[in-house]
Structures are given as C-alpha cells and as structure tokens.
Amino acid sequence: GRVVENISKRCGGFLRKLSLRGCQGVGDNALRTFAQNCRNIEVLNLNGCTKITDATCTSLSKFCSKLRHLDLASCTSITNLSLKALSEGCPLLEQLNISWCDQVTKDGVQALVRGCGGLKALSLKGCTQLEDEALKYIGANCPELVTLNLQTCLQITDDGLITICRGCHKLQSLCASGCCNITDAILNALGQNCPRLR
Image 1 (tube, rainbow, N blue to C red):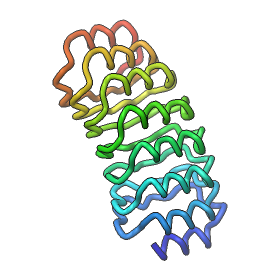
Image 2: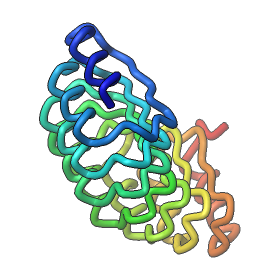
Image 3: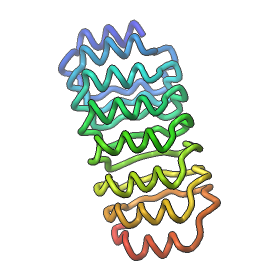
Image 4: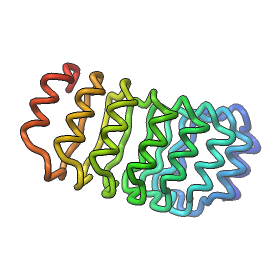
C-alpha cells in the first residue's frame, strides 16, 4: 500500500495507466490516496486485489472521472454499491471486468448501465446471481457493447440473451460457456440481429 501511495504522489496528474494485478497487499486506504492524487487515470487493473471493497470504487467515483477501463476481477468483496458509485462518477467507462464478483445482482447492473451507457466491453464471468433481468438492462442501455462475457452465469436463459441480441447490434464477441439454460433460439437471435459477430 505504501508503494502505491508513493507512486501516486510522485506521478500525480501524469499517470494514465496502472496495473496492480495480483497485488494482494493493496487495500482501500492506499487506493483512496491514489485516487485523490491521480485524477487523470484512464486504465486501472485491480484484478486479484482481494483486499479492496466498495470503498475503493467510491474513491474512484469521487476523484477519477476520466476512468475508461477498470478491471476488478476476483475482487470478491465488491457489491452493487460499487457499480452504483461507478455509474455516478465514471461516465466515460468503456471496459469493465467484474468476473467472479459473485455478490453483484441485477440491481447493480441496472445502476451501472444507467450512468455508463457507453460500455463497449463487459465481463460478468462467474457472477452467479445474475438473471435475465440484468441482461435486459444491458440490452436496453448499452448500444455500443462489442464484447460480453457471461461464462457460468447459470441463471440466464434465452429471454435475457435475446434482449442483448436485439439491443446490442455492434456485438462482436459473446461468451455463454456453461450457461446451460439456453437453446438454439439464441443462435437464431444472433443471426438476425448481430451481423458483426466474430
């Protein structure tokens, strides 16, 4: 944590990108100081920083309005409160990875897409509480979406994915591995609505 605080004090407003992937010793306090000092940060990777909680996202929301890419994968203390904070303070967000943040529900997704309609890449892998309603919010609010990962989101069905197909015509990549409740209807909907699929 002290190292991150020192980096933030030295680099200040110049820092645009930082990866702290797997830095398990970094917590909310260090990232609050970081957010206050590095208000021009655009790309931040906190993948596997297991100590951080919603307090970090509150700090990013308050001070880092230019954030475009955020990776919170495996930060299992993250809840809907984080997504609400990001929605309110980080309107430029284009890429978000909250894989394995299994406390997140449809309410968090609804809050997120309300303020971050420009999302292009969203990874929800292992967010096992998500259901079709969450996908309906994404389909209705994220027309720019290009990449969506729903691996092992076990509750989703055709209904939710069809709304994604109808609302996200720019979709190029979709992962639905392990989603055992979907049928051929999805392939039909993708074929009719997502001509850019790769």
